[in-house]
Image (cartoon, rainbow, N blue to C red):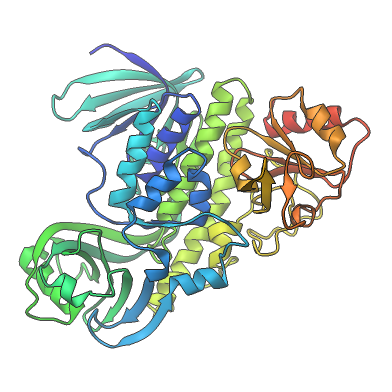
Amino acid sequence: MSDEEAPVLIVGGGLSGLTTALFLAWRGVPALLVERHSGPSFHPRAHRVNERTMELMRTVPGLEEALVEAGPWALEDFAMVIGMTVTGPEMHRLNLAEEAEAVIDASITPVPVSSAGQDQIEPVLLQFAKDHGADIRFGTELVSFTEDDSGVSAVIRDRTSGSTQTVHARYLIGADGHRSAVRSALGIGTHGVGTLSHNVNVTFESPALPRFMKGKEATLYYLRNPKFTGSYIGTHIPERGSVSFDYDPSKEELSSFDDKKCIQRVRAAFGVWNLEAKVVEILPWEMASRVADRFREGRVFLIGDAAHQMTPAGGLGGQTAMQDGYDIAWKLAAVLAGEAGPGLLDTYEDERKPVAEVTVARTVLNYIERLAPHRTDVPRDVKADNIGVTIGYRYRSRAVLTEEPDDGMPAENPRTPSGRPGTRGAHVRLERDGIPISTLDLIGSSFVLLAGPEGGAWTEAAGALPITVYRVGGDLVDVDGNWAERYGVGPAGAVLLRPDGYVAWRSTEGAVEPGAVLEKVLAQVLQR
């Protein structure tokens, strides 16, 4: 087969890879994605699209609605239970809707969440990516790649025909999971707690499930069984569920987990020894805590599980992966379009690696609290709570004009936003042409300048720059009158939001030469 060219080659078609392909294509970059498997994930794996991820996904028209529709349950129905078995007494119950009302409510974000599993999320991302022009090739694997100053040359192989071809790309993205061949080829190591447990996940079908789970279909069970620790969750198919359990490889060989033995574990998880069930899929996996030592090597980037492996406790692995994909996509698109200098790409690792470090640590603590309180061999010192790693994390890089003094904290409470550069732009209720919107509705395709009611000089000066401009108190009505407070500026101040909604810079008041100030700010943020 003949050689071909692509601006970006993505290796891996999971949540991070598909998100990257979609947002590159939406921004006009027709990326090529290769995935060795024959199609999207059959396994539910990661569940939910949380609030922060949905804030990013909704920038593509129709994607938010499609992801919500893909979820089989409403948030108010979802609960989390700790017990010995699914049908036995409950040790503890946490209703996630009540938790959301207590922590992440409409004052923080107006977006809905999706209860969809990975097997439902991936097809949605795939369809949207294709619709926007991404080239997605399943059943195709990376064989090798080399890199030089001009780009990356990669050999890919069709796993059905065996034919190979060379792809010349400006950049390569390794989205190929925690056993990343791309990361291995680059010689990048990992650090962290390491392996926490060896596990087997069994997807099964049982005609009795609807009867046992009536009224509890949207419940995630953390199981502290005398024989194992694990979990159970249903799927969008009423007769199908998923049980995960750990095992000791020094006592049980992985190969011993055939259909018969797995059904025994499923019955133990349910506490129903005569449960009629059949195996759909057996998937071994490792619960681990690791972060790659580097997220970038030249023109090659690592995202998702290739960059960080975390426990599923808290459901943050898939979210972090999708957010990685959004981040690298907008930055690559800006560089490829000539809008930003190549230095902008350095900020991917600068920003996303600290987020991965604190999120991985948080999920380890979640694992200990929910499944393994007996573990004393794992560090418990975490510098951010669940809301912090979900929606309050902060960025520090050359794409942010950080203000001093900097307290160095990895996250802030989104209930009391500071508006400081490097923080997520707070949700503020606005009206535009009589239509209710949020500040979050203004982000996505470009940089956005928001100026106060007396900030006309800022909006006039910004008119000659490649950014979108709004004046609060002019074209936008501040419904609750709290925009200035939530962004920490005065009536003549201004805030520059990046395409991901993060505050890149702010001025609390006006400036003598606002045009010169904005040009300098953009030049630094875009590394031009």
